[in-house]
Length: 193
Image (cartoon, rainbow, N blue to C red):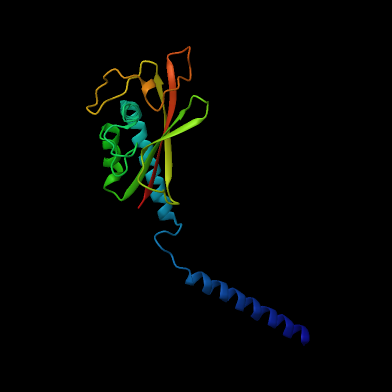
């Protein structure tokens, strides 16, 4: 009889524990910021969008022109105010218009960073667009751009007045005995606001 009581007590205890776990799981709130399949789906869409923007900009040459859209006398990107980068809107060029068209009116923020090799051999970073600190659900994609020794900077009107790439933040010629001046990596990070 004692064995039956202990068995019954164990079963009741197990049911009580199981009921507690089920009750606790039902009390967990699901918010828009909770990890779920829908937020993963949105992140996948954003990943595909940023990859598409970079691919089309690289193919059309807009990405290369955006990297070279540098004001050598002000040591900053063209048409920026006191910062060396754009803070609210994208660059006023084809790449910037593509970013704004894809993300600007959709409640999606983005940062654009350009990585390059410095004279000391380290990796330097130049912000192109900085719209804030990315959230935990941010996605990133990157493309490389090869700049040759004959690359010229673009001025405010989008023309190449003859100023060499050596007068920019990418002044280090990484391949002295070749036509390649440097290879930069353009990274775009996007996240929902």
